[in-house]
Length: 138
Image 1 (cartoon, rainbow, N blue to C red):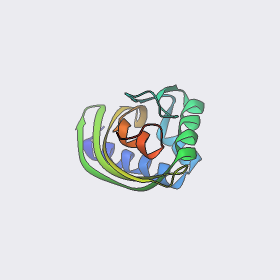
Image 2 (image 1 turned 60 degrees about the vertical axis):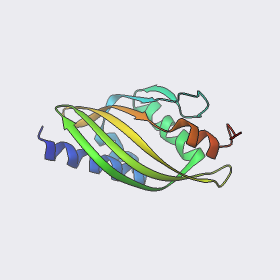
Image 3 (image 1 turned 30 degrees about the vertical axis):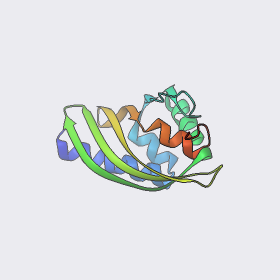
């Protein structure tokens, strides 16, 4: 898979996420996809490891229950074979508090046969937790 093909797949993946097109998402990811959302504080309702497409759907639902994705802007994409790192700046609104937040997040993708097989997220856990009122500034 070329770098151009990989970038096109990820663009389609992000578009399917944004639109909520489950049929398209199913085409974009492997049936055994593994999502690892690294939550250093252990307080985010969608943190942890999710294995398989049904768990992936549950993960996305959990995120959607708590956050509105206002804007996501890719800052840098690094492709090395089947591994892709996307550094992005996102703007979200917490559904429970209405608080707006901004953070830079790193996504690590593992590609297999033209589909997303692994998706790791390295977020600013504290910023998300504060927006959700899970922790407070002192």
